[in-house]
Amino acid sequence: LQPGGMVRQLSLKADGSRQPKSRFTHDLSFSITATDASVNARVDMNKHPEMVYGWCLLRLIHYIAALRVRHPGVRIFISKFDYSDAYKRISQSPRSSAASVICFGEVAYVCWRMVFGGSPNPAGFSGFSEMLTDLANEIAMSDYSPEDYVSPSVRESHLAIRETEEQEAGFADAIMPAFEVPTRSDSVRDCFIDDIIDCHLDTNEMMSRAGHIVQMAVHVMSRPHAGETLEPVPRKPLLGPDKLEAEGRSSERQIVLGWEIRTRDLKVALPHDKHLAWREDLVAMIRAGRVSRKELESCPSAVETS
Image (cartoon, rainbow, N blue to C red; front, side):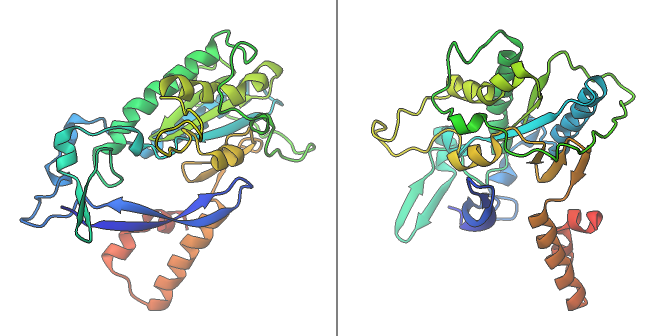
């Protein structure tokens, strides 16, 4: 048995604004009987792929720079797709389910799906999302046309451009890195756990397909959602509708893995809401005049960025 917890987050609404959200967590690092006896402590992480947060972001930045060098004066768009309730989509083995039991009152619940709090689960889901991303890139390089088939999750609003810079805004010059960045295609998709990021040029062909490619890959690799009236058990859509409206549309400004990428002037910026949150944390530490090591370690990025 392990305790549960609650993480406070900011959730994205369809209009792009953010609202507070509480996410339940299952603390599989908790140990009752002995030190290092928790479920997470007994997992051999060497058997799972290493999760490196920064590589996806760096690959995208290099690709955007390479596109700008080869296509100066052409807009570069980013769209982002969030796989809704990612861990709940994958079943655990009976042995793992027996190791992740949680109690509410006098009722014990066995978790048949991966839980938010298990150390191997990010790598476990990434095995799926990496294949999904590879499929999306293959679709993009094929002769696929939305006229042939469209994912049922696509809405007309998803195909509209969300945000662009002012028409007279100039295009920043890019400097190619010391290594070759392939740009055989006018678009590329990359991922980190449940976020799939689509980067594409503003060309007629690309814009006619950009809103369809990832949604098509998600549709063919997952059990399709039968619709609210036909699903035997209430089930959320594979891609969150609000996030699709807010982030799934082409934009010259997009928040990717916590950072705002601005493709017109080639800048990576701290999002405003994160700036406010980090600033409040730092001001509180300064006013207190002292800070514990645990508190300081909780916001290393804020200290480094400031």
